[in-house]
Image (tube, rainbow, N blue to C red):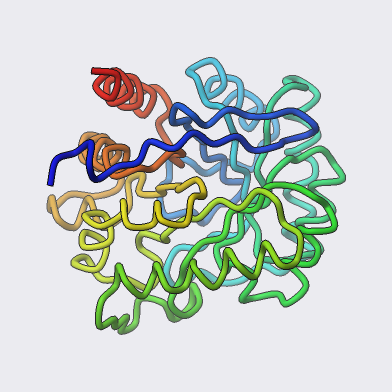
Length: 286
């Protein structure tokens, strides 16, 4: 099957803070971790001046969205709780929007209370690794806030997800999960749903690459697809290196994800991801 017959190239928009954000061309989401416990040391910071500097650099490099999280979700990471998560996130949101008032911020949380406080503080998108599975108030809260929602697939929880993940057919099972989840979100009134297949979340190395190879099948849902693969173990384990040395491999996987229909790349390295977007987007015009 040819590339153009496989990928639909559907054009999407999402409504953020009263304005439409165009996803007809893929965009880059920069990662800002307000934690000391992220798997990639280069993304960790708790100092507000470092946070605003990083935000500014990412925006200057072309990031359309900044994704801010305070709870590490690496395998086995301890949970800090909603109260501490809020205490870390709100000052970061206020600081970034003070310096860059037009920035679109996504809050990375699975707590409905945290999501609500951060949206009221100026964030525009909720990014939930559990797709509502870890807080039964999350979906109704997002519907009430009327903001875009990123729902991610995860088998298990961050504490258990990599112990022994098993699937009969990972691509089919992830698709089935999202068929149900997108319908559930729509029924509750969430207008803009973005799906994230959850690379590295309850998946073996082979599961991750089977999912990548079949990422285009998620396009049947006609919602934007986000790929979060940046510097993950699916890259550096295969290459026998580590997260710090996984940039080149990350760019390769970003390119493959774009060719398979991803329209949002969630990344640590914005400049390199933007270059992948530019090349693949040009190729798609030919």
